[in-house]
Each structure stands twice: as structure tokens, then as C-alpha cells.
Length: 408
Image 1 (cartoon, rainbow, N blue to C red):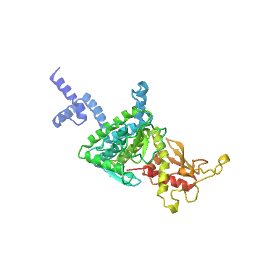
Image 2: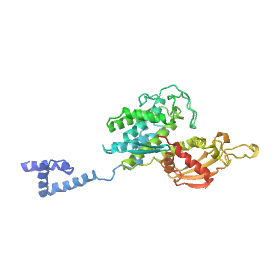
Image 3: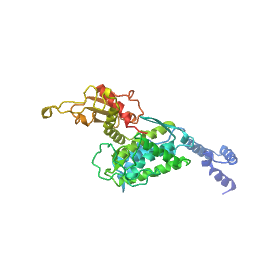
Image 4: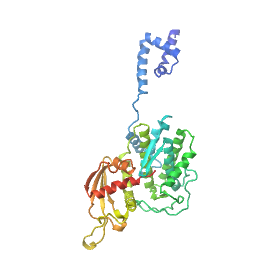
């Protein structure tokens, strides 16, 4: 090989780096002079420069959110997981992975953006790393129930009174309940205090280190949940106790909502949950609605109906046949439209009104995502688009109660 040929090959070997702008200026000048007289290298350089341009386009290159699930389904069909995640744990697995993908892309300036986190009691203003501290602080209740270390220093320990309220479980829970310390003040004070404590403990750490720590904790929760596939283990949040399966769906819902809050703050696209996961979130919210309705009724002044039912006495009905004269509670039909379509019957009155029965007093139609945004207090109940039929007062009552499901 002649000296000229050797130099030609040496310059040709720089084409890839040159296309990416990674060649020192002196060598770049020599290479460009060579390209002017070498058609072969010039053609290759053009192809490489065009390919390099695709690596720096401003449009996002993220794959559709459904692609991840499709790849996982394909892989699991070929080789089932040794320790499969229960169906009730899949929404949490998907939503934490989606949030992690967003956070991995954040630059130093984006980690300093402030996200708005509305809830029915106001709005929290947190940076992304502080949102992760909040998510981890609440996830800590699940960790305690599963026998894992609490990520919050000085967090919940066994021993304490029974929680006063319970979300209706899907089946009876049999395990002992790890208790959180008794609370004073508003029901959400303990969550805010835990968030503040974990945020202070992680202050000054690089945001990506906080993200990595949160992600490891998510993986630990999912692995432990796979060992309890029935999901019966009670999780004590201090203000309510729910089965593990409901707690995981609750955490998936909050992760989705706050992931979207962060994405909005950094102007980043964010996909909604998969339809099957969204349906689980809606089902949990619907089952919690009677508690929100009862709380709304209890907070209403006695002159407006108080806790005894609606002011017009429509909270009771009369049975038929052998049950004539028996009081029955009202119900409303919720129809969810969109990918997570379905129907639910929501009891409107408390247990004192008798078991719910009879024809629903009204029907309301909502888009599934709009319903979830309303439950997160991210929509105004007076402005949310809803189809109505029947008792408008009952529909308004449900719409106004739904944001009460939110918390800081």
C-alpha cells in the first residue's frame, strides 16, 4: 500500500467522527480538502452526515407508550416470568417506568422547574426531585406493610390504634396490619410531614441520585408484591386502611397524575395510562366515592341537609312486595366513555338510608381520563364535560364529591 493509499484510509476512518462534529479543526480542514477531490469519500460522508442529523432532531424520538407493553407481552409469551407481577401491580409497574423514562431525560435546568400539584385542599409547588420524595414518602406505607424498610427516616412502626375508616375491599383481608403512629390535625398532615422529612434528608443530593434511589424502592415494592399475589395484606395509611391490591392501584394513580404534573412543568409529552390500567384506577375511585360523599354530607351545614340525607328527603324510598315500607338508598349510574369504558352504580346515601336498591335516580357519562383528572382535583367539577340524565342535584353531588378523593 502506498503512502497515498494509507493517508486515504486514515482520512476515511475519520468520516464518522467528522459527521458528528467530533474531529479537531485541523484534521477536519484536511478531511474536507480530501472530500473535494475524492468522490467515493464524499458520497460516504454525505450519508453519514444525513444519519447524524437524525440523532439531533428536535422532535421527540420516544416510542409510543403502548410499545413497551407490547414488547413485554411478546417476551413473556415466549418465556413466562419466574415471579410474575399480579394484575393489580401492573399499573404501578407501568406508571413508575413511564415517570422514570421522563426523569432520565431531564437536564439540570429542567430539574429546577417547579411543578404545580393541585388537590382539593390547595396546590403544592414542588420541583421534580421533591415530587419523588413525596411519592416515596407515601410508598413507604406499602413498604412497611410488606416488611421492607421505610424510605422515610423515623417512619411508621408497628403499634397504634385501628384506622377509623376503610375502603370497601374486594375480599376479606386476613393479615395483621402494621400500624402508623396516631395522627393529630388534618388527615393528610402525616403525609405532608413525611414528605418534608424525606425532602430534608435528601436535600443537596444530585437529582439523578434521588431518582435512582426512588426507582430502586419501586422495584423492591414490585418484587415483594409478586410474593403476595392475592393482595390481601392490609396497608395502613393512617387515615384509612386498604388491601395491598388497592394500595398499589392508588400509588399507580398518583404516580400518573404527578408524572403528568412534572411533564407539564417541563413542557414534555406524557402518555395516559394503558386502558386496562386506567380501568383499575377508575374502579378504585368509584369504590371510594361513597366515603367522599359521606364526608361531603357530614361537612354540610344542618340547614342544607346535614349528615341525614338530602334536604328534600329523596334519600329514602319504598320497597315493593314483602319488603314494602323498607327504606332503600339512592344510586346513580356512572358511565365511563373512551378506552376504559364501563358502567358502575354508586350508592349516594349512607348506611342509615338502607341498602342501595331500585332504579338509579340519574345517569352521568364521563370520559375516563376526565374522571381521573376530576378525582385528582385537576378539573373543576362545575366545568367538567359530562352527559346528564335524571336527577341533576344527585349528579352535582357526585361531581363535587369526586375531587375530595385527592390528597397532597
